[in-house]
Image (cartoon, rainbow, N blue to C red; front, side, top):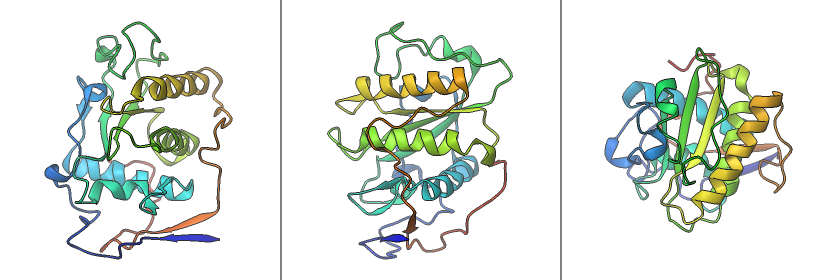
Length: 219
């Protein structure tokens, strides 16, 4: 088993604890979450705690920093980077066309039943030129939807924030993956090596980091 330790160590001044929601240290919700029920406080922490568990199991980690991608939210050196979440409002879906970096009407979102519970996850990278954004968001999509039995959501839509210079093609590829998953119920095969399934153990070294939470419902 490959271990990927943090190169920075458990510095309480560098990382927020997993049970802390610090608004100044997380990204401002972007357009992909606009009009939906954005999570904050305990609800954000519950979903993000589950994200950490799923990312660890599927080896979704930032190769630059050498840690589980979920840890980026608590890295105080990058206060505007990481994930924000929203529970999707079906009435807002049509109005949100074009908010993931593609022209309105260019590629409609895969339709879900009215009673479906959908989570939106928007990733803001550390820079507009982050070369890992494509791989990280695809790995995130596979982790969330490939382990769907571990949470209450019927679908998790993942997008990169529009501040990234390649947000349009990255989000177009994510939409295509999403459509295939919704239409077939099967996860598309990786085409770029993303989420290769390495047997990897992430050593976050975060003070107070929780043990994996096996509950089915993050709330």
